[in-house]
Image (cartoon, rainbow, N blue to C red; front, top):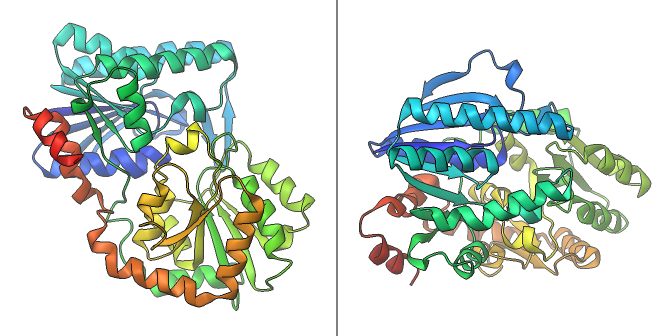
Length: 412
């Protein structure tokens, strides 16, 4: 089959790199002709706009709705945003008509790719599928209420027009069924990792990072992800870590990632008096991300119990598990399931600074708890379906003719 993923983000974004790119590669490996048509976070800087890699045809066609340079993210004003959205919609639509795929799979139900997908479906009869990997209306930053309303309406409407929907959390599956989607056409496929990126780490590059950051005799608590407080509660982690450093001498908090709230978090570190114990790394290349997990004693996914958190399947959690690093997170959404009911990490009270601080202190004071969970991960890793070359089996079924029977079997 000719499959086109239509994305409103680049392949360097979390979902682009962590979900759609490895999925596309795995589908191409199954003999499908796979295209990715995408927007880019800094389109004007691209020396090449299209290429073929790992059997996947990649096309960048326009600027996405935000601009990212280095570790910083900036938003366009309303007039710029309207113009960019119109141009991007036109370019995505044009690319679909040029490629003429049999299947169009939208990566997130956004306005620009949503309109392009609907137009192509109406004109060509191609099957339209949607991947809902976030609760977009609850997790994104919007410049005005009108933007949120448009995204919310499309997020609720587009899945009902699709031949099938893939989701990565049970919360999103139940939400879509509640909106009227046929349960047989909503397929649960959690996140995973690209085996090529998150394989065994070499000792030498990890040791070089240890020396670079002067981490001898230190234990690293790692956060690797977006620095956007609307959907990632890194402020909870900083406040909890302020309690940790009062009780544990050798702990270092390392924040890897960029986002619109990076400066705000730098300021909060100083305000809490922990700037000397927090390393703000900023955004790093995809190839370097696994090396930072190699430094970690624990990794942390700090969350409150809200729609954004329930609707997210955190890539950082699966990346950490793939590299044998126990995770500290809250009992929200599918996180308990992903951690094997705490067998592979630690579950804390959602949104609680004190609960998070207490677990971190206990884990640092009682290293055997961490080592036990690390051993559990390593023993169970091959059976945990962490890798996209395994998860693609479930994803591919959404396209099959016997969808009802297969999805019922998956979700028993």
